[in-house]
View (cartoon, rainbow, N blue to C red):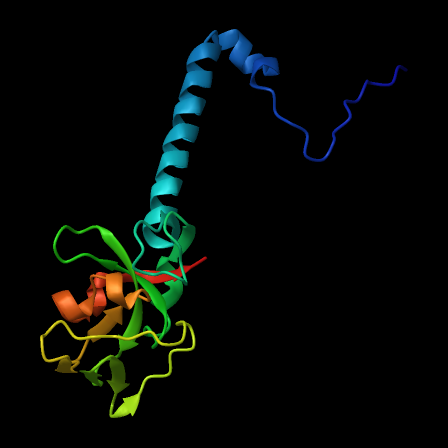
Length: 190
């Protein structure tokens, strides 16, 4: 009696569509390949959209409003999931929707909901105490937009006060006011 030939099975053996007898008999190899490529392309585009919309995305800082922390044209990551488990914290660098044109702006959170923000002749006070800003170079002044140099703001529920690190060249909450929690898209890291 003759022994029957056995085919060797390898783990992780690739499946070659053109070697499948059923495909060769059906004559639709080209259609099957096109269908497979279309499914892979659709899944790839959908995965990219879902990840960049809800998980993280690459952003390029344009402008000098976050100097010296983030330089102009530097690449950073916007982490959309950073605030799923906790609320934004003071000194976090976040991406915010620009209230005027809807573009992304990168700013630092200074005031949280319920905080009292007082800008007085170049200094920032939060809840009556001077804000310690170790991330800024010495002798950095934060002036209010009013002529008298002082401004007092109370953050309501869900409002955040954001500033750029380049205080002399930044369009931030001093100009457009506090931002809502919904306008904060996520945390920015380099």
